[in-house]
Amino acid sequence: MAKFGYHASHEQFKPSQLLQYVQAAYRAGFERVSSSDHFQPWSVRQGESGFAWSWLGAAMQSVPLTFGVVCAPGQRYHPAIIAQAAATLAEMFPKRFWLALGSGQALNEKITGDRWPGKIERNVRLKECADIIRTLWAGKTVTHHGLVRVEEAKLYTRPEVPPLIIGAAITPETAEWLGGWADGLITISHPYKKLKAVVDAFQRGGGKNKPMYLKVQLSYAQDEETALRGAYEQWRTNIFQSPVLANLQNPQQFDAAAQFIKPEDMYEYVRISSETQRHIEWLQQYVELGFEEIYLHNVNKEQQRFIEVFGEQILPVVVSERETALQA
Image 1 (tube, helix red, strand yellow):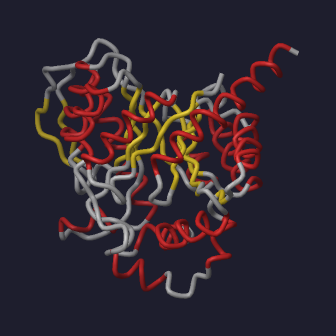
Image 2: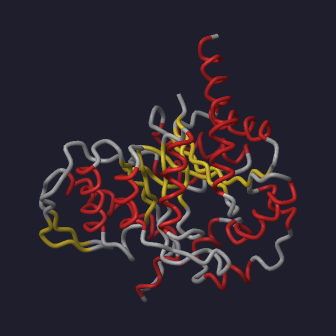
Image 3: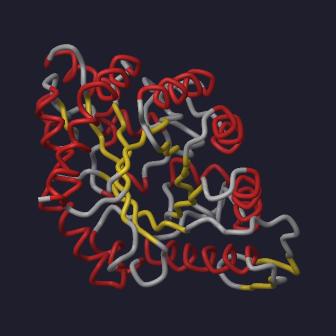
């Protein structure tokens, strides 16, 4: 049965606001929380970028939900530090934390001043980091000399049950590659055909019977014009192809790249509607594709109304109709 979660977008809101929204989501019936992990926002208009790992401890203490975070080890973060941070959360909150790993974006990772590698090299580095993290969680001493370096590292505080390592993929090619080594998949809500291609590639690469998570970009508001305006204002910098998203280096470059995006262009990339039935239909499609956990990111700034309406009018209908279909 699919579980629905709230996505905490650190690029758009202060950590204190996100804490309040997570508490509201819990009261409204959301069962999961996912968190971004940026050093800089996608756009100057978004204007925030709190440190996710500090926030996670407070948020997980405030509500009894399962949390996950998407991060990129290997440049901004040494994999041993990610292993330690994740192990600490998993020890404090058993079986309530998952870790998603991706190859990263220059927007966040290039702040170190190091060379920004190409995609193939970043993937090799990502796999090295995943192996290092798993070995540290197993209690072994790690020395590794590759694209990342580790010298005699041993993790002393470890959870009884290590977190899942979920692979983050946008393209079918990446999804197929990580299907063989990740514990699961997390991707974003592409148009249906492309999303199905990502799912098929993950399963073809070894991900069959592994959990699949989805982050849905949507914009819900009291009327269509407000929903579209909010999506355009906040999210037009985020709709480019993966190579562009990975290589632009600061919010100003993203804003410049988006200057020719038109409001109507947003419909292809964000589920924009003021009609609850339309959102119900979209979510049912994702459930039918096999996603076990679906994280809803309302990309406009009207979070409270979104949380209340989805909690009262949308999620119960999707869950009820899915249960009915399974019993038929």
